[in-house]
Image (cartoon, rainbow, N blue to C red; front, side, top):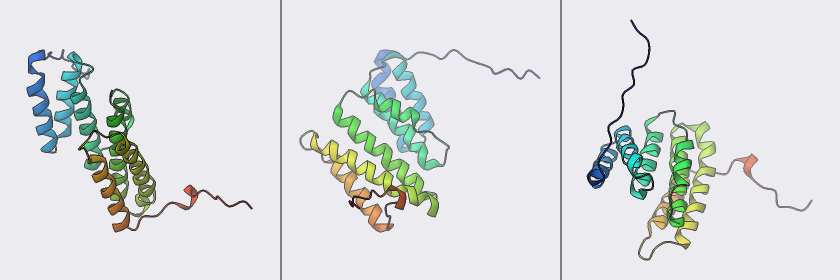
Length: 170
């Protein structure tokens, strides 16, 4: 039996199909099928590399995988963040990335929860930056900040001893 990998030439979407494809990607995300959403976004970005909706949906699909127990690196998510053109969205989604990483660590049990506090605080700082430049009527960053604060309190998370900065002048 031949052990060579089979490759296929991927088919290209038409530009007119982008809105419907992005709706499908969002639907797959909501159905907790991030790999399908990711594939659709990659097809859209192949023909429209600057499509901000596709970038955000792909970023969310990638970070959705954190909670599914996949060994997913956040490198792709960080690269996607840099392609967002809105300063608000970069700050907001940077916070969301840190928050999702924190939740993943928290789900790993006592050892992971040692790291969760710092990641939640990182998320909260990003949300504060986003809050300062948010569009009128958009309180998403406030809602996420409050969620992080509640998770920290509920789980009695504390800063790791080695992350504490000694401000005393001895």
